[in-house]
Image 1 (cartoon, rainbow, N blue to C red):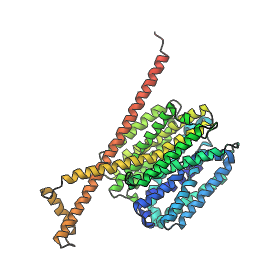
Image 2: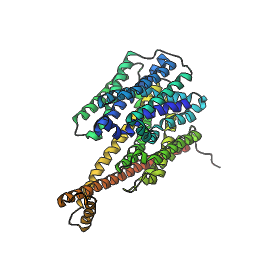
Image 3: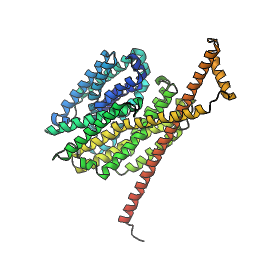
Image 4: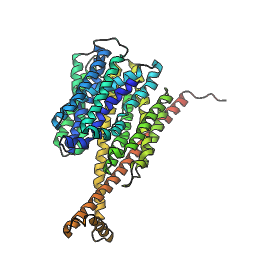
Length: 511
């Protein structure tokens, strides 16, 4: 179990240390914000689809070989970061990092499930594994300030290498129970996977960079998205005409699976309130990781508490009620955040973000357990098809949530800024007084009246932009609360219909 936690932190920090410190890294490699964001896109492009291939690779070549080679590859690529000093080399290394990080989450699951009895693997084991995988983001933001002070942005990678070496030792000292091998990889499996990987990779790049280059202003975004859709469509055509497909497309298109996929996708979008909404809001106010340490410490504790609570209460048949509790917490937390102002600080968001983190750890294990049980009932061949659902909703779904919410904030910021600017007229005594107050900040260093007035107006414009950002994030939090409320209402209606159906099918005998 400790080895599983170590593997999860190694994988999570490798992914989140870059996204949590993008401004510092872009300065180190001499890149703009958009150029530095390519580091995240390069990581996600191969990472979002590799788990699909790893299942068959593991079955054909053996679990032991899979584990040892996977962790060795991670150590080697993590060490390569120390030799990066420009954007182009960083992009290459991040692309390789996305490849070698994919097996780490699989190893985290396998190591966490290993010590549990079969009856507890899909309850306690699954809850603890998913909780461990969720700790990367808050831990990365907690330890980043200290690592940057020690060794600038290379200090981040020294910590990653240290964790990778400890994980390397753990994997070699603690071999997993061997599983029987079988030749399961066919030539068309490779063709289908390459098409799916291309489609998912192109889509991941578009979702990561779309709101920075703006969706309708960069033609290459549309070309990449079209290429991604074409690749996945071609893979689906191939799979539909195979006797033993890599993915069962017909099962994936069934109403039951579509309902399950939609539920997971909506949850991922709602949970982006924390990674995109709260983090973006605090950054818009100019706060850095060292100023938000208490918030991320509370978030970390709430995530662990949510995972332990889920492990304690999760049993077959309780999934719906656990989801009701999670959605209620998400809705309440997002609604609390929607009352933020430009004076809001992390201390005012401790309770709401703790509720959201707790709900995040509470929601996913029951959903994953019920989906796995549904796939296992149909046979082991359906496990691979289920993995693609989980993969799509968690990786692509997470990127989609960030893209949607980030775009919404950008649009609402422009709307609010336009509305605020319309009310600012220099003939208004209150506006004139505010400009005069702002000019006073430069009064001792600027003697030219025209330049002094310009500086005052610039400062006023900055305040207007800040307030427009705050209003936009409040709109975002309200939107997330509404989505969570709609999802909760739909779930309660669904539960009521099922309960009514059971009553009709099995009425109680009359007294």
